[in-house]
Length: 238
Ligand SMILES: Nc1ncnc2c1ncn2[C@@H]1O[C@H](COP(=O)(O)OP(=O)(O)O)[C@@H](O)[C@H]1O
Ligand SMILES: [Mg+2]
Image (cartoon, rainbow, N blue to C red; front, side, top):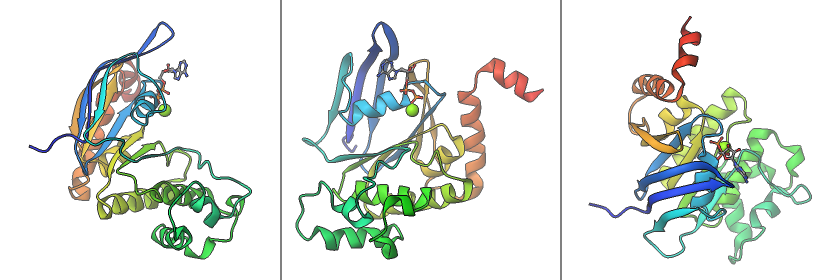
């Protein structure tokens, strides 16, 4: 059996006195694409920030199988530097030599080879998220964390970005964790979907990344039912 890339045991997180996550146990395996879904305010971003090392946890353990793996996060907002060109945004913070050539190759990978001299404000939201993806990949991360990165995009752009992220993750053997409240997105992109509920990853469903399109809709439906409160579901059905 493969050793998990990331193992989380009995993890608890409180903000002040409030319990946000309790007794979370999960293992993420190399090259897996895992989605975390759940209601808004359920602790998804908090869990992702703890995995990224951006936030302390209250108790429990969180271990990677390698020492200090390279981890990069992509957020809903692109966090590009507005005074820098797209190419400079990609090179920023990178210590690698030949980084301009690498940045150009990265722009080609995300389909923006003609935009290297543009500034972020001259691009559409979807294009800026492509740049953000390229920038995250510049460091050759072993783990890519995605916190609702497509949440602000229109449906068609979102669909294309889902395809692009999926393709790149497979091509580059990335391990990825996607936080989303969109059950269709989770069902489509992930190998495995963890449902966060009442501060815990209490449910797990198979994702459709390696299935064909027709098998995705029933998975999304099941996830929707897993997440939604009984009382809301009742009123929705009526
Ligand atoms: N820095 C913080 N200080 C206090 N409470 C926080 C902080 N960050 C998040 N929370 C609370 O933790 C809960 C989970 O938030 P979050 O992880 O952002 O949820 P999700 O990403 O699932 O919507 C929410 O109730 C939120 O108000
Ligand atoms: Mg969140």
